[in-house]
Structure formats: structure tokens, C-alpha cells
Length: 200
Image (tube, rainbow, N blue to C red; front, side):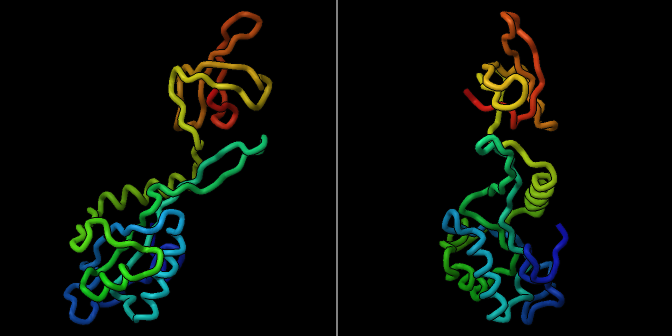
């Protein structure tokens, strides 16, 4: 994800080496921060505001609450909602020193760092993986329910609505399942969208 200055995903791009910090941007590391579950976005916005007010923008990079889009059927209507990958956590890119540590830790809705008083940076490759999943999750909404071969399901939409079926194959990349259902006493295989079936 390309960082934009103090935009929806960042707390400002470091433009110069912070005073007393060698290397500037190269000093920024990713840390995992605990938040109250369900308050991740509020905690993120409050942290960004506190960083600005304290004049510490150059010590912080992006602040991420990783999410993906999920599709569900509500009262027969398809609805896309957002689901957090890691409820109760967010990722903060920062230069860790006493000042920044306490600024983050004392932010409302934040309970502390993963690792306590000696947090360990998250490897860049893992953050890149999370960002890739976020991008893919927004572009292609996933079904909220995960299906496996052998699952008993009920068809809830389309010409086979109300039929009971058994999952034969799951095509996650296409968001489809191949199911076997009994029609006129004969087993028939049908391919359906994830949103057209629910677990029985």
C-alpha cells in the first residue's frame, strides 16, 4: 500500500531524519499494538491526532487496522461488510523510544504493545503479506462462512432454493462450491456461489 501523508492509512510520511535519530525513515519499524476489541478504528484516529498534537509526525509512518471485505446474505439480500483480520490489534510503524512508546501506550482505547515493555518489531515481509491480503480482500469480497468438502448445506437462493445438499468441492478463488443435491431421486452436481448456500 502506498503511504499518503496523514491519510486514511497513515500518520504522515517521515520526510527527514528525526532530531537525534540517525537514518530517519530507516529507523521506522512495525509494532503490534493491543486495542479494545471493536475500538480499533477509534484508537487509530485518536493515536494519529495525538501524534500530530505532540509534533511527532516524523517518528511515525503508517497506522494500519487490517481489514477485508466479506459478503453475506441478510434477509435474502447480498451485503458486503468489512471484517478485521486481527480484532483487538493494529500495526503501528514508528521509531520506538521512551517518548513514542508512552504516547502510544497512553492513548485511549490502547492497552499496550504486544510484547509489553520490550516490544519486538514485526518483520517487513509479514507486513507486506498483510497489506497484500488487505488489497485482495477489498478487490474480491470473501464469503463470511468457510465451506469444506463434506459439509451439509441448504440452498437459499436460485432455482434450487430450499434443497439440502452436500459440498463436493470448494473453489475459493472463484467463491463457488460444487454441491450434490437430490433431484427426482437422483444425485445431481450443481455449482453455486458461496452466497447461494448456507451451512445446514
